[in-house]
Amino acid sequence: MIQEQPVQQESESRSSRSHWLLELAGIGAFAVLAVLIGQQIYQGAAAFGYAWLLPAVAVAAYLAADLASGLVHFLADNFGSEETPILGPNFIGPFRDHHVDPAGITRNDFVDNNGNNCLASIPFMLLVWLFVPVAATAWGYLFGAFFLMVCLAVFLTNQFHKWAHMEAPPGWVRRLQSWGLVLSREHHDVHHESPYDTYYCITVGFWNPLLDRTRFFERAERLIRRTIPGTDPLLRSERDGSLNG
Image 1 (cartoon, one colour):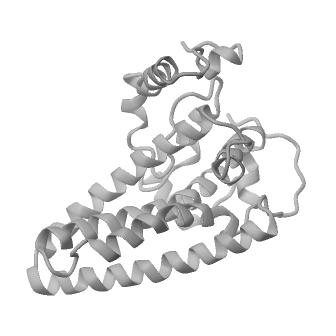
Image 2 (spheres, one colour):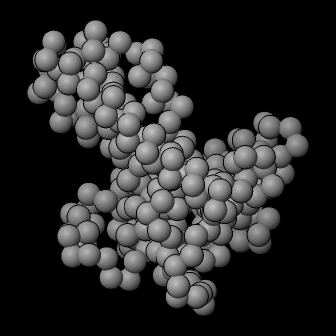
């Protein structure tokens, strides 16, 4: 089970005021770009059809976002530091703090919890909106639909993560968790057991059992540490004195 440290009960932002405002602006920009790309998708659907493909596209996008969440989580947990320029204080630091205070995420407000994912998505959304012919070609329309659904799932990932750490999430959230549609507390507890080196996917966790059985992340970490100059050759869990089983 998750080992939670004594913490203050009052909610407090983990970001500086300036970064909180940046995150707020990022959420606004994300919403605007989502609407703009959504309009292009609507035009593409009117022109080319293929509406019957959209449910399959949505499932594929959701699973892609889950895999992406695991890769990002793995990299932030194991490489770099809070001193890494730009990424350190805004992305790596929160992941590292989360292992010290797992329940801290439940005290974050909506902006602090979801703003960084929006900021990370905006450059890619701009590129798609400006350069992909979403409304003009069939492939652009289907790619645009897939891409927007991935972005929406990425946006929701930290909210699902927060719910997985809540002692008593809303009833409708518990139902979604029990149906396996969003990350559940029981599933995510595996990641918070020593040596904290598996079950990194935090959108729904679909890929976690497969990646764990194949020791994907352990193998990936060893490969990265052996091939990137200046990287400590030991796994993080080995340096912490807790070997993989």
